Image (cartoon, rainbow, N blue to C red; front, side):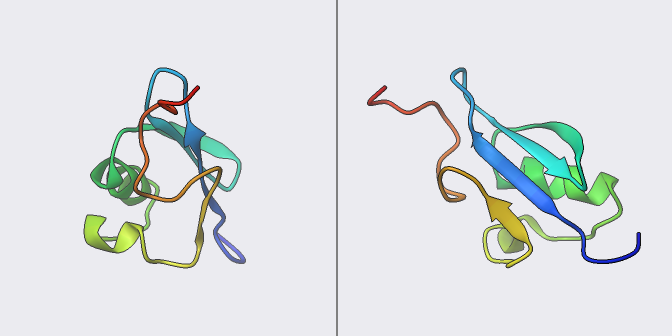
Length: 74
C-alpha cells in the first residue's frame, strides 16, 4: 500500500461491538482490542493487542478504546 494506512474504529453499535475499517474497507465488527489486532493482522499489519489502544494511526471515533458496548445511558 502506498501512503499512510488509515484505520478507523467506529463508535459502538447499538447491539455492541465496533466496526473496523482500513483504507475504506470494512474488516469486521470488533468486540475488544484483540479483535482489532486480528483484523489488522489479516490486513497485513502486525500489531500486538496491547499496542492497539496506543498507536496514533488508529482513529477511534465516538469514544476511546475502552468502550465496546452500546451506550448504557441511551
